[in-house]
Length: 360
Image (cartoon, rainbow, N blue to C red; front, side, top):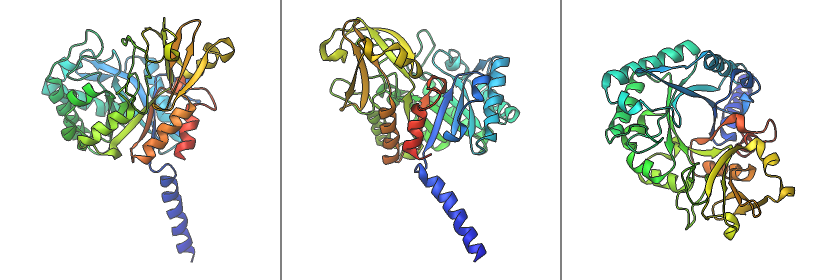
């Protein structure tokens, strides 16, 4: 009887906890420092990604002593959550200028893969996230890109998996828009080799957009065809398994100025002004100062407009990240991720909404 009860307890613990979030991963990108890392609620996330490492020659490089201390602090969070995975990330927006040139050559891809293994062994971290923005299509202004990048990316992933084996995770961040999906990645070749793809289903209107819209929409509208749902459906049609896709949420707002009042500023001309951390929004855009909050039931996203100041603000809130988390569950996705952890409130923030929705 004792053995049977012990078995039942272990069964319930394993399958109950695994099923609580329906197997969802919760991934936090992290761009803070070592002191902030100490206060991270590690039990609420499955993965944390240090952002960012860069190329030095053909090797993955940690830029400075502060970054080294930060990575060590993140790995130290495993004391709070032994199941936590800590990944190093290459690149970021503006952080992968040499990638097209470097990864064109086989010897460079091999040297890079070996350096990734060495760094993970040194830190006790768990893998690599490739955030090359973007292979084969224009990304950061002035950064080189070429059609051969698509094949280079595939070869890079193959080299990483060969050198890292099954011990370490290999993931990548993907643009959540149609051009990236159709032109940057050989999905059939790459996806069997990676653990998951992090879909940047935010910045779908961005600092270069001349018309306002939702920068992190769950669903599409006639005026805005790009959305998380559109990206996921496109990838499914290309044969990408739902169980390897991670939907993205934004812990920051994008703000446009000089926006006319038609439609409360939505889908109007304007000029990008700035980004604002979610934690700073209550003070920056108070309702008693004329900032009016709206909910778009087609897109499933909030927005704010100030008619006198002609400011338009697009962002994720507690409701929208809850809906994204439930969407990930209902579609059988791998999980949900967000950029980035230090932009959240210290308590009762967006991570808590994800945790509640996922049952993590």
